Image 1 (cartoon, rainbow over the protein chains, first blue to last red):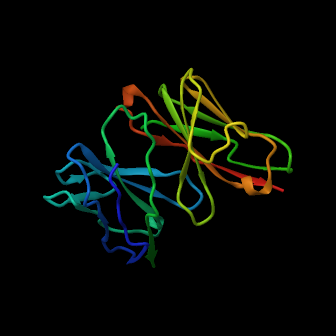
Image 2: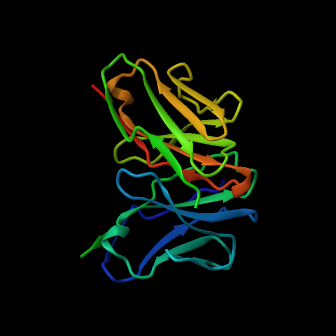
Length: 112
Length: 116
């Protein structure tokens, strides 16, 4: 799976949009971009994933650049409960028998 | 969505004893389960992959005789930490995937192990 690079930490004001970047310049054509988050002392929570089109669900939006070398996770109206470590993971859609590989992630602190 | 549970959520044990952690897929059949370990302020590190009915595959550096993994059914995997030591204190997280869920991984809430 391709390697990803994320900033170690970010701050965001409550109620504002949080934009979390991820670089995955070596991504292959069959690899998806996944985002998970981990709130303190909990298991990772799936947020969203995409291949090349922008995606939106009830939690967030995922913007993938046209060359697919980077992406941005957008939390449109951040709340204090969004404070967590956010992981960007690139993974091929195969049989799923390989585990997700977690990098260091971005620690998002939402400020009141 | 698919739900994965872990039991216990936290456990304290004495050095030299063994501890068993259960991971259950509550509403789907998990053909593959993964066990991760997370030390404070660090990321999740994969320990082992287990396929139902087969022996687990351990990552390099993980002692298979110390961390016993059993995946005897499609809804249950167990991790037994044998002869626990204080350095085994960590947050243990399992995830599960199955064919009918397009092999997406669903994570349990984690188990906090403290060895005194």
